[in-house]
Length: 295
Image (cartoon, rainbow, N blue to C red; front, top):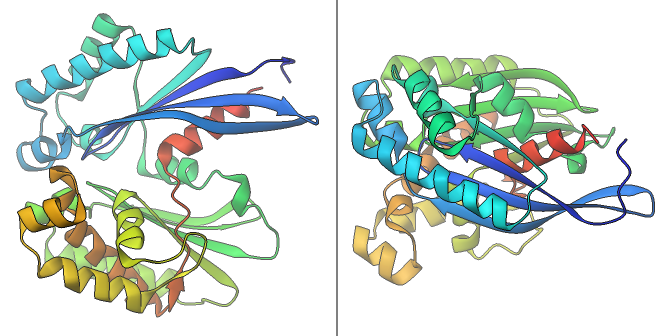
């Protein structure tokens, strides 16, 4: 393990389907234990999934925006004196025919190397958190993104089963999820997640974080399915601009929050669970732990 007496900084870049994120974390030892705390988070709403899922490739406009964002991220990492970074791309670039060209352009113009990861690796990273290493429980993670939903069952830090489905908020608003896909999704849940004994269900993703906040649920308290249902019902009754003005939602969140919420509802109803945990962690956090494991 590397020995250092001062705080160092790690950066993680998550190139998602609805947005890209740069997370900068403080890494330090205290009483012989390794810790990480969030220093800053930058989120840029570039909807790569809109291009990828409808047209099969990323548009020139969004390639340009992505390049500019990566150049900015490179500069931010420099001024933060970042020691090491990881950059991963998920569903949108997995689905893009011009993904390799984009990865090469980013490396050439910003010197940031991006790896396109599988849905299985994405699920493993998202669930890579010490908070869920207790031996007495099995955790079922539900991660709903713009282009995919990952379902993962973990016990003792060991993945028992994991599956990625091409069902996400951006796909739904573009009517790109057919009945057959929903049926396969539901059948898999019934066949693999029906035994709920001693299982804690953990919901991940920006939309469930926002639903939890809008519901008025107390931080750290389980979120009930009834509260999720009532919050989504209220959101459905509101207009686009009413959600922006009244609830202070960003435009790129307004149109996906209800479709994403319905994916969570679908899973929870199939599993017949009454409450979930919403820890507000994501892929970028799991990537930090992956970097820390190298120390």
